[in-house]
Image (tube, rainbow, N blue to C red):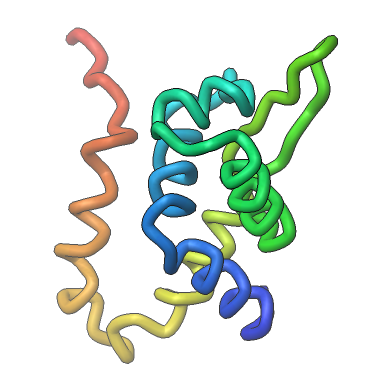
Length: 117
């Protein structure tokens, strides 16, 4: 990921409604959420929501797919991963103990269940 792409993504998230939209979409992976439902859940006018969705789409943070008359939005987790990797790639300066707490904070949401012995 390049610096310009990272700046575009961070700028898109630097607005309360867009951050709320993005977090909602991440929480609803992998099914996504119809545009109208996003607007209703966040109590935002449809035309205003369209603008926010367009900004997030241009930044590559979300993508859409038409299903009949609905447009379903989903978080683009590959872009999110690339953004986080870009931000943290040089973390630690060769001292992993500095980044260990950060990595530990990310694991609980995605940790696998231990196998029964």
